[in-house]
Image (cartoon, rainbow, N blue to C red):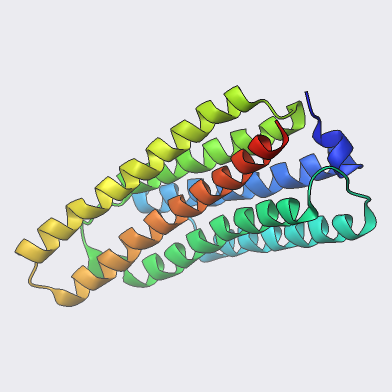
Length: 208
């Protein structure tokens, strides 16, 4: 079985950095879920800190790529994975910033089902990234990838439900637009998780 140890040279360091990056996505998703469900009041600094940590990890990966001889896998693949991971907490932070500003106007609009899907999506991403340390096992990656695709499909389906109610029943145009923007941001964050999964799965396919 092909090993990423031969790709990265300093394999453990790259595995660790990529896993830390995926964990930041999980931390951000859980914080968002706590925010919209009222389980725990997460202020914007928590999201900013996670995004900042993601930036630091991405910078560390770029620096290690400069200083490490890479074989067998294009360095563009590593950079693409790092970039895809970076975009997950960034998108989640955008949701948090807008939610804090708008939540009083939103009233009883419920985001918890979507935020739960986002948590599941980031967990799948972390699992896929963690699997890289153990080699490029196509069958294991395919199962996780299928689960991630199912989560993304469910998020797409759920995106249509509030629109029907808003367009048919709502008389508050501003509330409708705010809610629409936030629903789409959660769906976009889940799409970013799907993008990470596609990158990881593409790496496995290329080298299996």
